[in-house]
Length: 218
Ligand code: GRF
Image 1 (cartoon, rainbow, N blue to C red):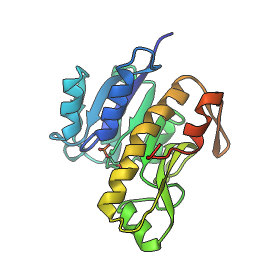
Image 2 (cartoon, rainbow, N blue to C red):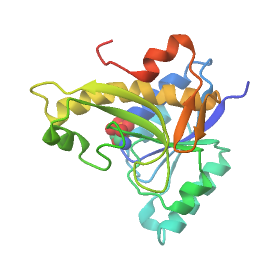
Image 3 (tube, protein in one colour):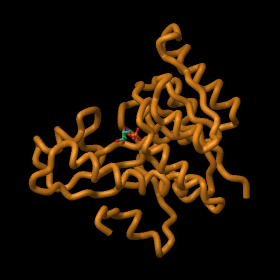
């Protein structure tokens, strides 16, 4: 069966992009990366894509006259590469309702908290300030409100004594790298169906543990 064509949008380091590149290197993975688009010309993730032989494209928000023009350029590039699923992976621009509606249920994001808690930036600092005992990460379909939308997969990470934002970020990131490819696989295989505000997952027996709880120590 044809693999689902992904367009990955980045702004920086691209470690989640790398996790998708690594997953897609397996011919059995049901998706392939058609293009990586960055709004930042020297984003580290662009080099990761080039190293993997993946096409890249820089669309700088600063050279476009307003959000609508920037987002039209994004959609034009994504459509030129026949992208069927847009994966936000550390993409640091807020997207308008027009763009998000155009790609409705065909655009997903990863966020380093257990949504709907701790939306927005400086997540790990706020997690530690609040004193929650568990945090984690979420892959979700994107809606117009920031870090909102039907949840596909979450991974749970315990907060432990002595955690700093950096230490916590490192442990959460390890789990991000597991759940993003998993979420893409579920979407690509048609096993993640949006029903109202939720996503129904068609779970296979051996996957149940990964989908419900990803433990970094496992
Ligand atoms: C990740 O923590 C992701 O959850 C958030 O931005 C960060 C991107 O990191 N949306 P990377 O560029 O994938 O390494």
